[in-house]
Length: 307
Image (cartoon, rainbow, N blue to C red; front, side, top):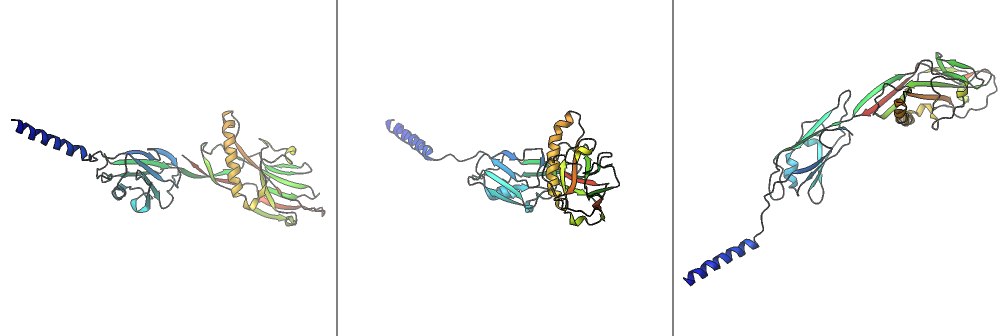
């Protein structure tokens, strides 16, 4: 009886000792803890990178093979994969910028099938899927505001809504400047200016304005009506050559839209106004007009990005 009890006890102790020294196997399935961009996010940039965070280190090969997308630009052969050293953070980078929407957003979808596994071979808890939409891009052609622009000379001579804008000097060698004004009310309030271009058609010259200097453009704010006091109105930013003005127009417009958001709430008209002048006017004593001429029916082309 004692011998039987001793053998049974020894067997039990041996069994306990074996279990204590054997490590427990990982049977917990991995999961996606977070995704960037957020699920359903709108207004995402074209250079987006997708980032997935997992609950534990993943088998990189099976996880990458489990990735899928039917959206052009995000399909498996159109992206590259990279991992953090711990194997818990996967970054998916499109090889080319994604496309923007136009009047309607462009939606992108991607996901992971259940073949994604952790280092112990456990499959992901459930297939993962997410979607987001990129920014919308639209171009607007804004016309000049009637009654808000014209030609103004240093002598005080004012022409409102002329057929042509004229920049240079007049017959009395008085400097002449031109003013143009655009209504921004039709632009989306949440937009960011991607590009801007002033479509100002040249209509020849009078005399020799080339001798006076180049035409420059600068942003001003003279309100609803142009008058004689606006000739030397302080500019809101440094002037730039008219021929290379697109980049500066973009910056000026963005500042105007940002400032006008608060003014709109107060019921004020949203405008973008500019003055054309000779940058450094050379002396001229010929008593003859020397003018650059432009079609007064100008267009301000603005490309906006918005959610």
